Image (spheres, rainbow, N blue to C red):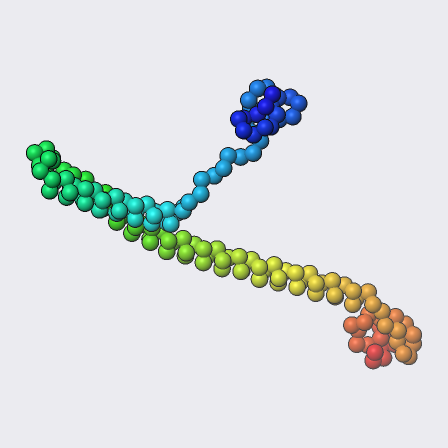
Length: 164
């Protein structure tokens, strides 16, 4: 058996999409591209504006043509075109509003990440310093006078009290 048309992939228990004929493909469906978020609203608003202006142009052309003059639609087509243009303007204004809030959120996120990075660096420096202190406390220095072993950080010999 062969999988979906054009794929040439096997189907069924031997090695394909599923346990029987057909089955779902193992790869995800492609995601449609295009603007999202505030960019999508901006593009949508511009499209609504263009559609509204094209509607007005077509209505104007139709009303000037004597063949359509007796239809009796009144102002309804202009009202519809006006509503479409209004929707476009609202979408454009909302896109700019959303953009500014998205940028503020991105700025807050960047600041939080920078703060976390600094905190991580501080923590790593503390750990490094603890390791250095632990190493220094294990290093012993022999006293010049009595020969006893003292911590490297000690100023005086623990045994005889001489300066190290």
